[in-house]
Each structure stands twice: as structure tokens, then as C-alpha cells.
Image (cartoon, rainbow over all chains, first blue to last red; front, side, top):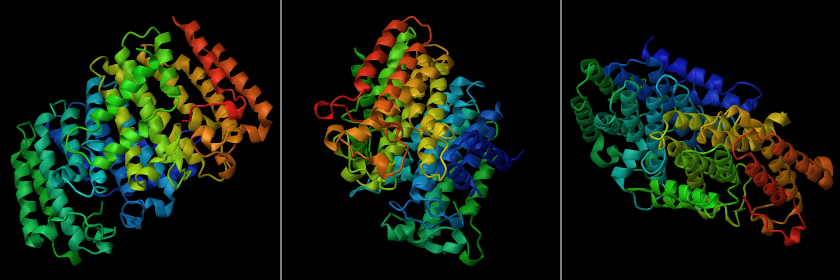
Length: 292
Length: 292
């Protein structure tokens, strides 16, 4: 099974487990809505890429890790779209969850997906309890306070922002989770994999800034111009389009150079390279960039 | 150290760990606000009571379990108070978190506390990885979908409610988490401890219904008459005050009878008995019922 099929199967299975027995029907349906159709699934794909590069011996653990990470990412999108944050009407080309269901169900769907992420990791404990619990720890640290995506979003309520901490928490955190959880799932020490996650995260942030500044809402499947609207820092505003593209390339070269020595090093480098091409904006009118 | 000190210390330590390094100051402060001053801390107290009754051999694990459970409970209060749910102005005698800070910070504080709950459990994995991961699993199942407090709250968005599933998920779930996590922390099989949690949960639900119907907002430190306002099922509306009190006593007798045979059985029965007295409403004007 390819990475994509492994991710979709693991996510569908997890959502199905959250629907057994007598459950509130709207929340049940909202959970499915929140994870499908998938976006690029870039974070779990990187996770599986790293696990494979590490010489993965227990693919069920990697699948659980990839699924857990994607569930947390989907939860963050649902909560970020809420009226009190971005107030987004659309996501992945369809109405945002609170528009399609309601605000209470959007809060609850996000909460449920966060919890489900950790449950999925606990479910594979029989295969290797230490890896399972290390995955819980890493995912928690990259999701919550003080260094995870909750902290990243929290910075947007501050009058004075520590830009480095903000970007590291808001965007890079889940990419570091991807590389480190991939290493843990593959039975390796996660420490050496932090830099790769940081650099991919930085590249992704710049690519996102470029898309927000250059594309229209129809192409992206979500509102554009949000950074200007919410006065958020944006690399295009700071360095111009060409400057931001140069920075994107630098980050990705740095990412490839930072890959730790491992059995599947060359293949992983190739994978990051191919992301580099997909991330770099081309003529907006012809592009079909998958929305997140 | 008594149960109360163990709980307060564990909760404070967890919140402090979520504040290390460069963090968004308002969210950091909101986390502290969400957990203090504590309410009755009834769930973690029951958890420590069960762990002790089971012949607790690793108190650090019990402390982590008690803390994790209380963090999840506090998170649920913060999210339940949001404008899109109860729209509560007060909680534990002070402004609700979204009133004191903002709605975005209330969503993020709840999310961060949920994540922190699982992180706290992962932190004690070095003492016993299987217990740590079993605690993660049990807490997740009693928090998320399909049977946890998220599901319980989700029922309130349904036109037709499965009342048994609703009460089981909305209130009993975290009491079952308390008894089962106490058993796991104490090195015992959690299955035998489900009934005790269910029965204490049922009693607590009736007591809460009585308080909502009988007390004023000042005594409770939170708005009253919420069940009538939100058309939620309430035992007093259904059975009258005396009928509800009779049911409360029946539930607590059943709870005591259901305690599995264990080294500290008698002491635990005494503890549940003392809760029975605290839960039963007396003349409202003289009462000082601790608010949740």
C-alpha cells in the first residue's frame, strides 16, 4: 500500500471507531466531514517517509502515528476557522465545519479529534508500549503549550509577538512532530530529526504566505488575503515575491542537507525535493495547489 | 501528603511545565486561571481514593492520573461556558474564562488543557509504560467520541436524545474515568471498577440537578436554572425534589455496594459515604456547596 492509501485507511478506521454504539448523529457526521476529503496530507506523508527512511519495522505503529498527526491537524483547522478566530466560510473547497453544522459542533468536533489523536496512539501500545508513549509525548508537546500549535495560535492574541517562537509553534511544530514521530515509529532516536522538521516547516510557512498573497479563493478552496486582514506577519509583505521564493528554496536545500544518515536517506531527499517543486508557486491561473 | 495537597501540587506542576520558555503571556495566564481556585476536585479525589484502596505502589502515577483527569474536567468547563454553549458569565465565583480573557483564548485554553492531560500521563511512562498508556486510553475513551464527555455535550445538539447514552457520556464518563484510572494507577484491572464510577456519576448528576433547581447563583458561584433555560433533562423536573433526593440515596447505596473487594475497601466505602452527605442538599440559605 502506498503512503496515501495507508493514511486514508488509518484515518477512516479511526473515525469509524469514534462512531460505534449510540452516538450523537450530528457530531458523528461532523467528525467525518472534518477529515474528508483530505487536503494534501503533507504532514503524515512526511511522517511515513521518515519512518520508511529509518528502516520501519512496525508499519502499524507508523500508520497510527500518521493518523494521529493528521487528526490533530484537522482539529486545528476546524478550530482556527471558528468565528472567534479566522471566521472562515470555506475550507478545502466546501463550507467550513461551523458553517455546515454549527459552532457548538465545530468546537466539539475539534475537541473529539484532538482526543482521538491520542487514543489512536494508545491503541498500538501492544506492539511496543515505549514507542506508543513516546509518540503521545511528542505529539502533545507539538500540539499544546508552551511550544505547540495552541501556543502558535495563542501568539495571535498578544500585542507583542516573539516572531521566532510564533512561527516555530504555529507552523513548524507539526512538521517537527512529523519528522520526530516518523523516527520514533521507525524505532530511531527523534532528536536528530528536529532540524529537518523545522526547515520543512519554515519552507511551508513561506509557501503558505506566497499562496495567501498570490492565489484566489477558488484555486485555494479557502479565503485568501487572511494575513493582511488579521495583520499577521507574512514573508511576501516583508521580502517581496521573489525574495520569499528565494527563501523558500534556501529552506528546502537546508532541509535536504539536514537529513540524518539513515538507510533510506536518498529516497527521503528525493521526496523532499519533489515537495519543493509542489510548494513553489507557478502561474496562479494554471495551478491546482491542494488546499489544506 | 493528603489527597487534596497531592492534587493541587500535581496540577500546579503541570501548568508550570506548560509555561516554560517564550510563551504567549495571555494564554499562559489563562491556563492558570482555568484550574484555580479549584472546585471540589471530586473526580481526582475519587481517583486517588480508588488507587489507595487498590494498594497503590506508585503514587507518582496516581498523582499524574488525578492531575490529567482534573485538567480534562477543567477544559470541559471552559468550553462548556463558551457563548455557543451555556454562554455562562461566571464559574467558581469569578468571571468565566472567555469573559475574563476572550473567546479565542478560552478555545485555546481548553484545547491546551486537553493536550496537557495526555502529556502528564506520558511523563510517568518511565515508571511503568503499560500503566501510562492504559491511562491514556481510558482517559481518551471517557473524554472523546463515541462515549466520552464530548459525546455527552454532542447529544445537546440532537433533536432526539438517547437519555441513557446522554447521561452516561455527559456526567458518568469522567467518574468512570476516575474509578478506572485509579485502579490502573494502583496496578489493578480497571474493568471491575466501572460500576462504582457509573453509580457515583448518576448520584452526582441528580445532585447537580437538585442544586441547579434549588440554589441561587451566589451560593453556587455559577448561573442557575440552566437546565430549564436550555431545555435539558433534569431529575427534579421529572421526579420532584423528594423523588430526586430518594434517587440520589439509592445511587450512593448502590455505589458503596458495588465496590470491588480490595485491601482498602472499608476506607473507600467511608469516603463515598461522606460524599453522600456533601452531595445531599440541605437548607439552601445555609449551604456552602463548593461550585464546580
